[in-house]
Length: 149
Image (cartoon, rainbow, N blue to C red; front, side):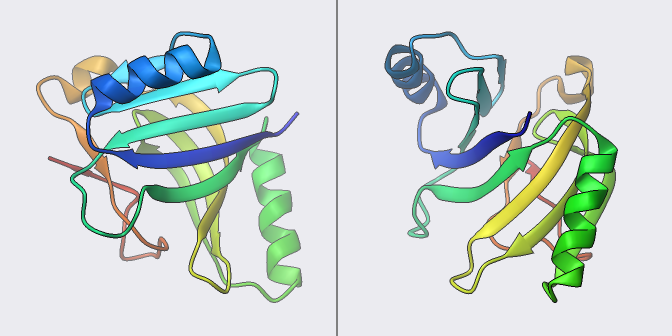
């Protein structure tokens, strides 16, 4: 089953985790420096929080769907390409503290959407003493979804 994915930029990760834990009625699935996510079964939602300074671009970073397999990502890519949409694919990329395969597309208003599968959780030791921050905007071959800071 696919889940809706929403990624928000937040000013204070601790305050946001506290708020969303109360709002959603559950603890986060994953918490890392500058990052947290909630993985709800009902409603099927993957909510990611990325600590980022307020830069005037708003709090929405990107939207997407979490799917269950690499084949589902490939099928989504093929469907979008057949429809004439411009896509960008990433395979075995480490982003948001996890290894993923994904395909990106942008809507006419500039909202980035991804369809992705989680392949593995990135080892916490890989990021010890560092944190990742989401980069705004549509992903291309020359950009990444996250940067180390």
